[in-house]
Image (cartoon, rainbow, N blue to C red):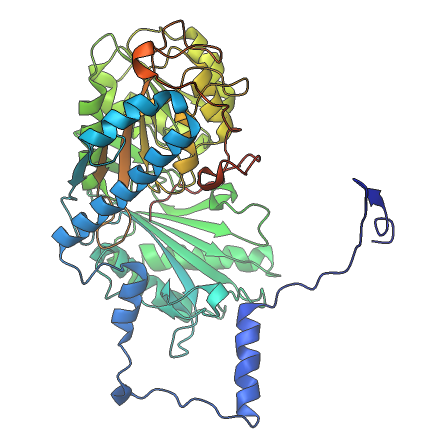
Length: 530
Protein backbone atom coordinates (compact mmCIF):
# COMPACT_ATOMS: atom_id res chain seq x y z
CA UNK A 1 0.00 0.00 0.00
CA UNK A 2 2.80 2.41 0.91
CA UNK A 3 4.52 1.69 -2.38
CA UNK A 4 1.42 2.44 -4.47
CA UNK A 5 0.11 5.42 -2.51
CA UNK A 6 0.91 8.66 -4.29
CA UNK A 7 2.27 7.01 -7.44
CA UNK A 8 1.65 9.02 -10.62
CA UNK A 9 -0.31 6.92 -13.14
CA UNK A 10 -1.93 8.30 -16.29
CA UNK A 11 -1.40 11.87 -15.05
CA UNK A 12 -3.13 11.13 -11.75
CA UNK A 13 -1.84 10.41 -8.26
CA UNK A 14 -3.09 7.12 -6.83
CA UNK A 15 -4.70 7.10 -3.39
CA UNK A 16 -4.62 3.71 -1.65
CA UNK A 17 -6.74 2.81 1.37
CA UNK A 18 -7.46 -0.41 3.23
CA UNK A 19 -10.91 -1.65 2.19
CA UNK A 20 -13.10 -3.37 4.73
CA UNK A 21 -14.63 -6.67 3.57
CA UNK A 22 -18.38 -6.85 3.17
CA UNK A 23 -20.08 -8.26 6.25
CA UNK A 24 -21.02 -11.94 6.16
CA UNK A 25 -24.82 -12.03 5.61
CA UNK A 26 -25.40 -14.76 8.20
CA UNK A 27 -23.26 -13.03 10.85
CA UNK A 28 -24.97 -9.72 10.11
CA UNK A 29 -28.40 -11.28 10.50
CA UNK A 30 -27.52 -12.97 13.80
CA UNK A 31 -25.99 -9.79 15.21
CA UNK A 32 -29.21 -7.95 14.43
CA UNK A 33 -31.21 -10.68 16.18
CA UNK A 34 -28.97 -10.46 19.26
CA UNK A 35 -29.38 -6.69 19.43
CA UNK A 36 -33.17 -6.98 19.41
CA UNK A 37 -33.01 -9.57 22.19
CA UNK A 38 -30.93 -7.19 24.36
CA UNK A 39 -33.55 -4.51 24.77
CA UNK A 40 -35.13 -3.62 21.46
CA UNK A 41 -38.52 -4.83 20.30
CA UNK A 42 -38.32 -8.19 18.61
CA UNK A 43 -40.95 -9.44 16.20
CA UNK A 44 -42.89 -12.34 17.66
CA UNK A 45 -42.34 -15.68 16.01
CA UNK A 46 -45.25 -16.53 13.71
CA UNK A 47 -47.61 -19.14 15.08
CA UNK A 48 -49.37 -21.82 13.11
CA UNK A 49 -52.48 -19.65 13.15
CA UNK A 50 -50.69 -16.56 11.85
CA UNK A 51 -51.13 -17.54 8.22
CA UNK A 52 -47.49 -18.49 7.54
CA UNK A 53 -47.24 -20.78 4.54
CA UNK A 54 -46.26 -24.42 5.20
CA UNK A 55 -42.68 -25.43 4.47
CA UNK A 56 -43.78 -27.67 1.60
CA UNK A 57 -45.15 -24.64 -0.26
CA UNK A 58 -42.19 -22.43 0.65
CA UNK A 59 -39.64 -24.88 -0.73
CA UNK A 60 -41.80 -25.57 -3.80
CA UNK A 61 -41.81 -21.85 -4.55
CA UNK A 62 -38.01 -21.81 -4.35
CA UNK A 63 -37.08 -24.88 -6.42
CA UNK A 64 -40.12 -25.13 -8.71
CA UNK A 65 -41.62 -21.61 -8.88
CA UNK A 66 -44.21 -22.58 -11.53
CA UNK A 67 -45.47 -25.68 -9.69
CA UNK A 68 -48.90 -24.13 -9.10
CA UNK A 69 -49.40 -23.03 -12.73
CA UNK A 70 -51.21 -25.24 -15.29
CA UNK A 71 -48.69 -26.78 -17.67
CA UNK A 72 -50.15 -25.15 -20.78
CA UNK A 73 -49.69 -21.77 -19.12
CA UNK A 74 -46.09 -22.67 -18.27
CA UNK A 75 -45.41 -23.39 -21.94
CA UNK A 76 -47.07 -20.14 -23.02
CA UNK A 77 -44.96 -18.21 -20.53
CA UNK A 78 -41.76 -19.85 -21.77
CA UNK A 79 -42.63 -19.08 -25.38
CA UNK A 80 -43.11 -15.44 -24.42
CA UNK A 81 -39.72 -15.47 -22.67
CA UNK A 82 -38.06 -16.88 -25.81
CA UNK A 83 -39.73 -14.22 -27.94
CA UNK A 84 -38.30 -11.55 -25.64
CA UNK A 85 -34.83 -13.04 -26.17
CA UNK A 86 -35.34 -12.90 -29.95
CA UNK A 87 -36.60 -9.32 -29.68
CA UNK A 88 -33.36 -8.33 -27.97
CA UNK A 89 -31.29 -10.23 -30.53
CA UNK A 90 -33.20 -8.49 -33.34
CA UNK A 91 -32.30 -5.11 -31.88
CA UNK A 92 -28.65 -6.05 -31.37
CA UNK A 93 -28.26 -7.34 -34.93
CA UNK A 94 -29.49 -3.99 -36.19
CA UNK A 95 -27.02 -2.17 -33.94
CA UNK A 96 -24.02 -4.35 -34.78
CA UNK A 97 -24.47 -5.28 -38.45
CA UNK A 98 -25.94 -2.52 -40.59
CA UNK A 99 -25.47 -4.63 -43.71
CA UNK A 100 -28.21 -6.96 -42.46
CA UNK A 101 -30.77 -4.17 -42.01
CA UNK A 102 -32.67 -4.85 -45.28
CA UNK A 103 -32.90 -8.56 -44.44
CA UNK A 104 -33.83 -7.70 -40.86
CA UNK A 105 -36.58 -5.35 -42.06
CA UNK A 106 -38.21 -8.14 -44.09
CA UNK A 107 -37.86 -10.64 -41.23
CA UNK A 108 -39.54 -8.27 -38.78
CA UNK A 109 -42.44 -7.83 -41.19
CA UNK A 110 -42.87 -11.59 -41.52
CA UNK A 111 -42.40 -12.63 -37.89
CA UNK A 112 -44.02 -9.98 -35.72
CA UNK A 113 -40.93 -7.80 -35.26
CA UNK A 114 -38.62 -10.78 -34.67
CA UNK A 115 -35.48 -11.69 -36.62
CA UNK A 116 -36.73 -15.25 -37.09
CA UNK A 117 -39.80 -17.34 -36.26
CA UNK A 118 -40.19 -19.01 -32.86
CA UNK A 119 -41.67 -22.39 -33.68
CA UNK A 120 -43.34 -22.87 -30.31
CA UNK A 121 -42.29 -24.77 -27.19
CA UNK A 122 -42.19 -28.56 -27.30
CA UNK A 123 -43.60 -30.05 -24.10
CA UNK A 124 -41.75 -32.46 -21.84
CA UNK A 125 -43.30 -35.95 -21.96
CA UNK A 126 -42.86 -36.04 -18.17
CA UNK A 127 -43.84 -33.00 -16.11
CA UNK A 128 -43.12 -34.37 -12.62
CA UNK A 129 -40.36 -36.52 -11.10
CA UNK A 130 -38.29 -35.96 -14.23
CA UNK A 131 -34.84 -35.04 -12.84
CA UNK A 132 -32.22 -37.76 -13.21
CA UNK A 133 -29.62 -35.73 -11.31
CA UNK A 134 -30.30 -33.96 -8.01
CA UNK A 135 -27.87 -32.15 -5.72
CA UNK A 136 -28.90 -31.92 -2.06
CA UNK A 137 -27.31 -29.72 0.57
CA UNK A 138 -26.69 -30.94 4.11
CA UNK A 139 -27.36 -28.45 6.88
CA UNK A 140 -29.52 -27.43 9.81
CA UNK A 141 -33.27 -27.71 9.26
CA UNK A 142 -35.70 -24.81 9.54
CA UNK A 143 -36.85 -26.08 12.94
CA UNK A 144 -33.23 -26.62 14.02
CA UNK A 145 -33.20 -30.33 13.14
CA UNK A 146 -29.54 -31.29 12.92
CA UNK A 147 -28.13 -32.97 9.80
CA UNK A 148 -31.00 -32.30 7.41
CA UNK A 149 -30.59 -33.30 3.75
CA UNK A 150 -32.51 -31.34 1.13
CA UNK A 151 -32.84 -27.92 -0.47
CA UNK A 152 -31.88 -24.55 0.97
CA UNK A 153 -34.95 -22.43 1.70
CA UNK A 154 -33.25 -19.20 0.68
CA UNK A 155 -29.89 -17.92 -0.49
CA UNK A 156 -26.79 -17.62 1.69
CA UNK A 157 -26.31 -14.00 0.62
CA UNK A 158 -29.84 -13.36 1.87
CA UNK A 159 -28.92 -14.63 5.32
CA UNK A 160 -30.55 -18.06 5.02
CA UNK A 161 -28.80 -21.40 5.49
CA UNK A 162 -31.83 -23.44 6.61
CA UNK A 163 -32.39 -26.69 4.70
CA UNK A 164 -35.77 -28.29 4.00
CA UNK A 165 -36.28 -31.97 3.21
CA UNK A 166 -37.25 -32.52 -0.47
CA UNK A 167 -40.00 -35.07 0.09
CA UNK A 168 -42.84 -32.78 -1.04
CA UNK A 169 -41.18 -31.45 -4.20
CA UNK A 170 -42.73 -32.45 -7.52
CA UNK A 171 -39.69 -32.56 -9.84
CA UNK A 172 -37.54 -35.00 -7.83
CA UNK A 173 -38.24 -38.72 -8.46
CA UNK A 174 -39.36 -40.96 -5.62
CA UNK A 175 -36.24 -43.11 -5.94
CA UNK A 176 -33.99 -40.09 -5.24
CA UNK A 177 -36.11 -39.11 -2.23
CA UNK A 178 -35.68 -42.66 -0.92
CA UNK A 179 -31.90 -42.26 -1.07
CA UNK A 180 -32.14 -38.90 0.73
CA UNK A 181 -34.17 -40.43 3.57
CA UNK A 182 -31.77 -43.37 4.00
CA UNK A 183 -28.70 -41.13 3.87
CA UNK A 184 -30.18 -38.65 6.34
CA UNK A 185 -30.88 -41.48 8.78
CA UNK A 186 -27.28 -42.62 8.42
CA UNK A 187 -25.53 -39.28 8.99
CA UNK A 188 -27.72 -38.59 12.03
CA UNK A 189 -26.33 -41.78 13.55
CA UNK A 190 -22.73 -40.58 13.14
CA UNK A 191 -20.81 -38.24 15.49
CA UNK A 192 -19.90 -35.88 12.65
CA UNK A 193 -21.65 -32.50 12.30
CA UNK A 194 -22.81 -30.66 9.19
CA UNK A 195 -20.43 -28.27 7.46
CA UNK A 196 -21.07 -24.59 8.19
CA UNK A 197 -20.39 -22.12 5.35
CA UNK A 198 -20.19 -19.40 8.00
CA UNK A 199 -17.55 -20.88 10.31
CA UNK A 200 -16.01 -23.44 7.91
CA UNK A 201 -16.43 -26.05 10.64
CA UNK A 202 -18.15 -29.43 10.39
CA UNK A 203 -18.06 -32.27 7.89
CA UNK A 204 -21.16 -33.32 5.90
CA UNK A 205 -21.62 -31.03 2.88
CA UNK A 206 -23.61 -32.42 -0.03
CA UNK A 207 -25.29 -35.48 -1.52
CA UNK A 208 -25.67 -35.91 -5.29
CA UNK A 209 -28.04 -38.57 -6.62
CA UNK A 210 -28.07 -39.72 -10.25
CA UNK A 211 -30.70 -42.14 -11.52
CA UNK A 212 -31.63 -43.84 -14.79
CA UNK A 213 -34.72 -45.42 -16.28
CA UNK A 214 -32.93 -48.76 -15.97
CA UNK A 215 -33.24 -48.56 -12.19
CA UNK A 216 -29.60 -47.62 -11.63
CA UNK A 217 -28.88 -45.25 -8.74
CA UNK A 218 -25.58 -43.46 -8.08
CA UNK A 219 -24.91 -41.54 -4.87
CA UNK A 220 -21.96 -39.16 -4.39
CA UNK A 221 -21.22 -38.02 -0.83
CA UNK A 222 -19.22 -34.82 -0.19
CA UNK A 223 -17.45 -34.68 3.17
CA UNK A 224 -14.98 -32.19 4.65
CA UNK A 225 -12.35 -34.26 6.50
CA UNK A 226 -11.15 -31.31 8.62
CA UNK A 227 -8.53 -32.84 10.96
CA UNK A 228 -9.75 -36.44 10.92
CA UNK A 229 -7.03 -39.06 10.62
CA UNK A 230 -6.73 -41.41 7.65
CA UNK A 231 -7.88 -44.25 9.89
CA UNK A 232 -11.03 -42.36 10.95
CA UNK A 233 -11.85 -41.55 7.33
CA UNK A 234 -11.28 -45.15 6.27
CA UNK A 235 -13.61 -46.39 9.03
CA UNK A 236 -16.28 -43.89 7.94
CA UNK A 237 -16.15 -45.06 4.31
CA UNK A 238 -16.40 -48.70 5.39
CA UNK A 239 -19.35 -47.87 7.62
CA UNK A 240 -21.08 -45.93 4.83
CA UNK A 241 -20.56 -48.73 2.31
CA UNK A 242 -21.88 -51.39 4.71
CA UNK A 243 -24.95 -49.29 5.51
CA UNK A 244 -25.99 -49.14 1.85
CA UNK A 245 -24.93 -52.68 0.86
CA UNK A 246 -25.78 -54.69 3.98
CA UNK A 247 -27.63 -52.45 6.42
CA UNK A 248 -30.80 -50.37 6.56
CA UNK A 249 -29.77 -48.38 3.49
CA UNK A 250 -30.09 -51.40 1.18
CA UNK A 251 -33.75 -50.57 0.55
CA UNK A 252 -32.77 -47.27 -1.09
CA UNK A 253 -31.58 -49.19 -4.16
CA UNK A 254 -28.14 -47.58 -4.55
CA UNK A 255 -26.09 -49.41 -7.20
CA UNK A 256 -23.04 -47.10 -7.20
CA UNK A 257 -21.53 -45.18 -4.26
CA UNK A 258 -18.76 -42.57 -4.29
CA UNK A 259 -17.08 -40.56 -1.54
CA UNK A 260 -15.45 -37.16 -2.06
CA UNK A 261 -13.13 -35.56 0.48
CA UNK A 262 -13.81 -31.88 -0.07
CA UNK A 263 -11.63 -29.56 1.98
CA UNK A 264 -10.99 -25.91 1.18
CA UNK A 265 -11.73 -25.67 -2.52
CA UNK A 266 -8.97 -24.70 -4.92
CA UNK A 267 -11.47 -24.65 -7.79
CA UNK A 268 -15.17 -23.72 -7.95
CA UNK A 269 -15.92 -26.86 -9.96
CA UNK A 270 -16.93 -30.04 -8.15
CA UNK A 271 -15.58 -31.93 -11.18
CA UNK A 272 -12.04 -31.06 -10.11
CA UNK A 273 -12.36 -32.93 -6.80
CA UNK A 274 -10.96 -36.49 -6.56
CA UNK A 275 -13.58 -39.24 -6.34
CA UNK A 276 -13.25 -42.47 -4.38
CA UNK A 277 -15.42 -45.40 -5.40
CA UNK A 278 -16.54 -47.15 -2.20
CA UNK A 279 -19.32 -49.57 -3.21
CA UNK A 280 -21.30 -51.01 -6.12
CA UNK A 281 -20.71 -50.39 -9.82
CA UNK A 282 -18.48 -47.59 -11.07
CA UNK A 283 -21.05 -46.33 -13.56
CA UNK A 284 -24.74 -46.16 -14.27
CA UNK A 285 -26.27 -46.64 -17.71
CA UNK A 286 -29.14 -44.92 -19.49
CA UNK A 287 -30.97 -45.52 -22.76
CA UNK A 288 -31.92 -42.65 -25.04
CA UNK A 289 -33.47 -42.93 -28.53
CA UNK A 290 -32.67 -46.64 -28.54
CA UNK A 291 -29.00 -46.03 -27.72
CA UNK A 292 -27.10 -46.93 -24.55
CA UNK A 293 -24.97 -44.45 -22.61
CA UNK A 294 -22.50 -44.87 -19.75
CA UNK A 295 -22.61 -42.08 -17.16
CA UNK A 296 -19.71 -41.28 -14.81
CA UNK A 297 -20.17 -39.33 -11.55
CA UNK A 298 -19.19 -35.93 -12.98
CA UNK A 299 -20.15 -36.42 -16.63
CA UNK A 300 -22.80 -34.14 -18.14
CA UNK A 301 -26.07 -35.75 -19.17
CA UNK A 302 -29.33 -33.87 -19.74
CA UNK A 303 -31.34 -33.93 -16.48
CA UNK A 304 -34.63 -34.82 -18.21
CA UNK A 305 -34.07 -37.93 -20.33
CA UNK A 306 -37.49 -38.05 -22.01
CA UNK A 307 -37.37 -34.36 -22.94
CA UNK A 308 -33.77 -34.80 -24.15
CA UNK A 309 -35.12 -37.28 -26.69
CA UNK A 310 -37.50 -34.57 -27.92
CA UNK A 311 -34.59 -32.11 -28.08
CA UNK A 312 -32.27 -34.41 -30.03
CA UNK A 313 -35.04 -35.38 -32.44
CA UNK A 314 -35.61 -31.69 -33.19
CA UNK A 315 -31.88 -31.18 -33.78
CA UNK A 316 -31.81 -34.13 -36.18
CA UNK A 317 -34.77 -32.76 -38.15
CA UNK A 318 -33.26 -29.27 -38.36
CA UNK A 319 -29.83 -30.47 -39.44
CA UNK A 320 -31.18 -32.09 -42.66
CA UNK A 321 -28.43 -34.68 -42.57
CA UNK A 322 -27.30 -37.08 -45.29
CA UNK A 323 -24.73 -39.83 -45.61
CA UNK A 324 -22.31 -37.18 -46.89
CA UNK A 325 -22.73 -34.89 -43.87
CA UNK A 326 -20.09 -34.19 -41.23
CA UNK A 327 -21.15 -33.04 -37.76
CA UNK A 328 -18.88 -30.99 -35.50
CA UNK A 329 -20.26 -31.34 -31.95
CA UNK A 330 -18.77 -28.63 -29.71
CA UNK A 331 -19.15 -29.14 -25.93
CA UNK A 332 -20.31 -32.68 -26.62
CA UNK A 333 -20.34 -33.98 -23.01
CA UNK A 334 -20.76 -37.77 -23.03
CA UNK A 335 -21.46 -37.64 -26.77
CA UNK A 336 -25.24 -37.95 -26.64
CA UNK A 337 -26.03 -35.55 -29.50
CA UNK A 338 -23.31 -36.78 -31.84
CA UNK A 339 -24.00 -40.44 -31.14
CA UNK A 340 -27.73 -39.93 -31.75
CA UNK A 341 -26.87 -38.51 -35.21
CA UNK A 342 -23.97 -40.79 -36.16
CA UNK A 343 -25.95 -43.38 -38.13
CA UNK A 344 -27.36 -40.62 -40.35
CA UNK A 345 -24.03 -39.04 -41.35
CA UNK A 346 -20.58 -39.74 -42.75
CA UNK A 347 -18.63 -38.57 -39.70
CA UNK A 348 -19.06 -36.99 -36.24
CA UNK A 349 -16.32 -35.13 -34.37
CA UNK A 350 -16.91 -34.20 -30.74
CA UNK A 351 -15.02 -31.65 -28.61
CA UNK A 352 -15.24 -31.64 -24.81
CA UNK A 353 -13.15 -30.14 -22.00
CA UNK A 354 -13.95 -32.75 -19.30
CA UNK A 355 -11.65 -35.77 -19.62
CA UNK A 356 -14.08 -38.02 -17.76
CA UNK A 357 -16.89 -37.12 -20.18
CA UNK A 358 -14.65 -37.80 -23.19
CA UNK A 359 -13.80 -41.24 -21.82
CA UNK A 360 -17.52 -41.93 -21.42
CA UNK A 361 -18.21 -40.65 -24.94
CA UNK A 362 -15.63 -43.00 -26.48
CA UNK A 363 -17.03 -45.93 -24.54
CA UNK A 364 -20.55 -44.95 -25.59
CA UNK A 365 -19.51 -44.99 -29.24
CA UNK A 366 -18.10 -48.50 -28.77
CA UNK A 367 -21.19 -49.71 -26.90
CA UNK A 368 -23.36 -48.59 -29.80
CA UNK A 369 -20.95 -50.04 -32.39
CA UNK A 370 -20.21 -46.72 -34.08
CA UNK A 371 -16.94 -46.36 -35.97
CA UNK A 372 -17.55 -43.01 -37.70
CA UNK A 373 -17.23 -40.88 -34.57
CA UNK A 374 -14.23 -39.48 -32.70
CA UNK A 375 -13.87 -37.33 -29.59
CA UNK A 376 -11.18 -34.81 -28.69
CA UNK A 377 -10.46 -33.53 -25.17
CA UNK A 378 -9.44 -29.91 -24.75
CA UNK A 379 -10.57 -26.33 -25.03
CA UNK A 380 -12.81 -25.72 -28.01
CA UNK A 381 -10.99 -22.47 -28.83
CA UNK A 382 -7.75 -24.47 -29.21
CA UNK A 383 -9.16 -27.46 -31.11
CA UNK A 384 -11.69 -25.92 -33.51
CA UNK A 385 -9.20 -24.14 -35.83
CA UNK A 386 -7.05 -27.24 -36.42
CA UNK A 387 -10.02 -29.57 -36.84
CA UNK A 388 -11.72 -27.23 -39.31
CA UNK A 389 -8.70 -27.40 -41.61
CA UNK A 390 -8.98 -31.17 -42.02
CA UNK A 391 -12.77 -31.37 -42.40
CA UNK A 392 -14.43 -31.49 -45.79
CA UNK A 393 -16.11 -28.16 -46.54
CA UNK A 394 -19.19 -29.75 -48.07
CA UNK A 395 -22.16 -30.74 -45.92
CA UNK A 396 -20.55 -29.60 -42.66
CA UNK A 397 -22.82 -28.60 -39.78
CA UNK A 398 -21.85 -27.45 -36.30
CA UNK A 399 -23.85 -28.10 -33.14
CA UNK A 400 -22.94 -26.33 -29.92
CA UNK A 401 -24.45 -27.21 -26.54
CA UNK A 402 -22.33 -25.13 -24.14
CA UNK A 403 -22.50 -24.60 -20.37
CA UNK A 404 -24.99 -22.15 -18.90
CA UNK A 405 -22.77 -19.09 -19.48
CA UNK A 406 -22.25 -19.87 -23.16
CA UNK A 407 -19.15 -20.29 -25.30
CA UNK A 408 -15.86 -18.51 -24.67
CA UNK A 409 -15.41 -15.57 -27.03
CA UNK A 410 -12.35 -17.28 -28.56
CA UNK A 411 -14.58 -20.14 -29.73
CA UNK A 412 -16.87 -17.66 -31.47
CA UNK A 413 -13.83 -16.10 -33.16
CA UNK A 414 -12.71 -19.54 -34.35
CA UNK A 415 -16.18 -20.36 -35.69
CA UNK A 416 -16.39 -17.03 -37.50
CA UNK A 417 -12.98 -17.60 -39.13
CA UNK A 418 -13.96 -21.11 -40.26
CA UNK A 419 -15.55 -20.22 -43.60
CA UNK A 420 -16.45 -23.88 -44.22
CA UNK A 421 -19.00 -23.71 -41.39
CA UNK A 422 -22.17 -22.56 -43.09
CA UNK A 423 -24.75 -23.91 -40.63
CA UNK A 424 -24.76 -23.82 -36.84
CA UNK A 425 -27.35 -25.03 -34.33
CA UNK A 426 -26.93 -23.37 -30.93
CA UNK A 427 -28.54 -25.14 -27.95
CA UNK A 428 -28.82 -22.88 -24.90
CA UNK A 429 -30.22 -23.61 -21.44
CA UNK A 430 -29.87 -19.92 -20.53
CA UNK A 431 -30.45 -17.77 -23.64
CA UNK A 432 -30.04 -14.46 -21.80
CA UNK A 433 -26.59 -15.50 -20.57
CA UNK A 434 -25.70 -16.62 -24.10
CA UNK A 435 -26.85 -13.36 -25.72
CA UNK A 436 -23.25 -12.18 -26.19
CA UNK A 437 -22.59 -15.34 -28.22
CA UNK A 438 -25.64 -14.75 -30.41
CA UNK A 439 -24.64 -11.14 -31.07
CA UNK A 440 -21.01 -12.03 -31.76
CA UNK A 441 -22.07 -14.61 -34.33
CA UNK A 442 -24.12 -11.97 -36.14
CA UNK A 443 -21.98 -8.84 -35.82
CA UNK A 444 -20.37 -7.31 -38.91
CA UNK A 445 -16.94 -8.57 -40.03
CA UNK A 446 -13.98 -6.48 -38.91
CA UNK A 447 -10.22 -6.68 -38.53
CA UNK A 448 -10.79 -8.48 -35.23
CA UNK A 449 -13.79 -10.60 -36.17
CA UNK A 450 -12.72 -12.37 -39.34
CA UNK A 451 -15.18 -14.19 -41.54
CA UNK A 452 -18.70 -13.55 -42.71
CA UNK A 453 -21.36 -13.14 -40.08
CA UNK A 454 -24.18 -15.55 -39.30
CA UNK A 455 -27.88 -14.76 -39.07
CA UNK A 456 -30.69 -16.59 -37.21
CA UNK A 457 -33.30 -18.24 -39.42
CA UNK A 458 -35.44 -20.22 -36.97
CA UNK A 459 -35.84 -20.85 -33.24
CA UNK A 460 -37.53 -23.50 -31.13
CA UNK A 461 -37.83 -24.12 -27.39
CA UNK A 462 -37.94 -27.50 -25.66
CA UNK A 463 -39.14 -27.70 -22.08
CA UNK A 464 -36.53 -29.76 -20.26
CA UNK A 465 -37.38 -28.18 -16.90
CA UNK A 466 -41.14 -28.30 -16.16
CA UNK A 467 -42.35 -26.41 -13.09
CA UNK A 468 -39.43 -23.96 -13.42
CA UNK A 469 -38.86 -20.82 -15.50
CA UNK A 470 -36.16 -22.46 -17.61
CA UNK A 471 -36.19 -24.21 -20.98
CA UNK A 472 -33.75 -25.06 -23.77
CA UNK A 473 -33.71 -22.70 -26.75
CA UNK A 474 -32.49 -23.87 -30.15
CA UNK A 475 -31.46 -21.25 -32.70
CA UNK A 476 -30.46 -22.21 -36.23
CA UNK A 477 -27.83 -19.83 -37.64
CA UNK A 478 -26.71 -19.74 -41.28
CA UNK A 479 -23.70 -17.98 -42.76
CA UNK A 480 -24.39 -14.76 -44.67
CA UNK A 481 -23.33 -15.03 -48.32
CA UNK A 482 -21.30 -12.10 -49.66
CA UNK A 483 -20.96 -11.07 -53.28
CA UNK A 484 -17.14 -11.03 -53.36
CA UNK A 485 -16.19 -13.54 -50.69
CA UNK A 486 -16.75 -13.67 -46.95
CA UNK A 487 -13.87 -11.91 -45.26
CA UNK A 488 -13.53 -8.86 -43.08
CA UNK A 489 -13.19 -6.73 -46.22
CA UNK A 490 -15.99 -8.45 -48.14
CA UNK A 491 -18.89 -6.47 -49.51
CA UNK A 492 -22.32 -7.93 -48.71
CA UNK A 493 -24.52 -9.04 -51.56
CA UNK A 494 -26.25 -6.08 -53.13
CA UNK A 495 -29.65 -7.63 -52.56
CA UNK A 496 -28.99 -7.51 -48.82
CA UNK A 497 -27.66 -3.98 -48.55
CA UNK A 498 -29.06 -0.49 -48.88
CA UNK A 499 -26.73 1.19 -46.40
CA UNK A 500 -23.03 0.94 -45.74
CA UNK A 501 -21.92 -1.24 -42.86
CA UNK A 502 -20.64 0.41 -39.70
CA UNK A 503 -17.56 -0.49 -37.68
CA UNK A 504 -18.15 -3.52 -35.49
CA UNK A 505 -17.65 -3.32 -31.75
CA UNK A 506 -15.06 -5.62 -30.13
CA UNK A 507 -16.18 -9.20 -29.68
CA UNK A 508 -17.91 -9.84 -26.39
CA UNK A 509 -19.08 -6.30 -25.63
CA UNK A 510 -22.24 -5.91 -23.64
CA UNK A 511 -25.06 -6.00 -26.22
CA UNK A 512 -27.12 -3.59 -24.15
CA UNK A 513 -24.46 -0.88 -24.39
CA UNK A 514 -22.48 -1.50 -27.56
CA UNK A 515 -22.02 2.17 -28.30
CA UNK A 516 -20.18 2.88 -25.05
CA UNK A 517 -18.55 -0.40 -24.16
CA UNK A 518 -15.11 -1.27 -25.48
CA UNK A 519 -14.31 -4.27 -23.25
CA UNK A 520 -14.46 -7.95 -23.91
CA UNK A 521 -16.36 -10.46 -21.85
CA UNK A 522 -15.16 -13.70 -20.37
CA UNK A 523 -17.50 -16.57 -19.72
CA UNK A 524 -17.55 -18.90 -16.76
CA UNK A 525 -19.00 -22.42 -16.66
CA UNK A 526 -21.74 -24.43 -15.26
CA UNK A 527 -23.61 -26.54 -17.60
CA UNK A 528 -26.06 -28.16 -15.26
CA UNK A 529 -29.52 -27.32 -16.22
CA UNK A 530 -31.73 -25.35 -13.93
